[in-house]
Image (cartoon, rainbow, N blue to C red):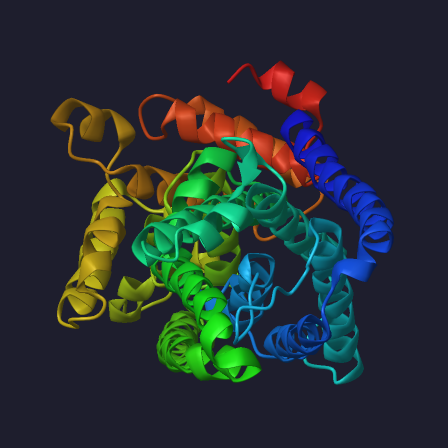
Length: 441
């Protein structure tokens, strides 16, 4: 609970900081608006339209993250666009850039909501404002050797490679902040560890983020030679990459739907209670995030939890209530090994067989052999808890189930996982902190 409140305060701090940045940027833009050239206004309009359109078309990564390569590339390119064909300057100030990007992002979210293609998410707008503010200040305001990078880039016309590297460095710093803010948002929504969320963000959207920063640098350089037409022209490769990532996400979503459909086979056959697999998967994911599992491991854990009772289809008579905790350890292992053998025959699902097979292994045996993965221990505890509660969410059932699990703590169940289960249940309001303290796990 303390962790959730701390993350919530961080999210609010991002919004308030962005609001303060926009207010200061508006004042700065008004004071320097006379420096903007006519051509600069035209380029600013094209950038604004590109950001609005980019907000409407997002790419979904790993099913949980929305990334906007087009809008983000245009947002990062604008503060680094300082010249136009023929060498006239755009005259942009840092405040003007922040105001234009903030307004365009705000309009993009409004249009998304109006077209019913997405929600209006304030902290995403705030993140964009902070990222562009950092890029604009680094490139247009921070003095290096007494002059900002925007001035130095003009002096490096004979060493354009140095100018390109400097602009790429600014874009990478801003993108690093973007990934950090995305990690904070993900950790708030899923209650995952912040450091693990950051690692997952880099792994999930890192290549796409690198392509975005490279595109932003190329666009900023190309506008000086081609004008406004360089913006859509050099966004085309990024657009194709976004299409490829979107197609990959569709394939991953189709696989997830197939596994969920397969997991309901035991429900339809009367071997397990309705929704048992979904409940075990949800609880396993919550415990996995609390313990800091990586995103790819969480995906395998979710799929394993959905299919963990697949071996029950081999039974002649269903287990009463489908509760495998009520049968002998030998029968538990036979069911687990049967389900694992079914999964091992499928190339795409064979990696799950180890987790499904290991769910019946007692923790003490696995600890001594040092071969029982954390995912197996999580699945064992989650399955036992749902079997003992019968799917009921009220406090008495949850507390009684924890008491039963505590009786086999250290032999059947991993104390580390059980303590994580307690934190998840307290956060969800299914048990009280006093009940957990009384259990002394």
